[in-house]
Length: 63
Image (cartoon, rainbow, N blue to C red; front, side, top):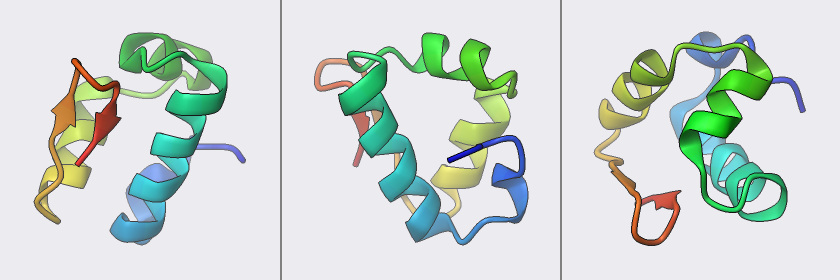
């Protein structure tokens, strides 16, 4: 799954995909995910915040 078009994705689906990727491929490291997909981490967090999701570094996922 390519996240470069995350801004146009459904927010709930985006959160699910991002959490899956964080868990399976990036060991909960949001910075590493953003660099790998060449996306703006702040923009991703902002998009997910519109649906009430916040990144929790202690668990490495959005909730």
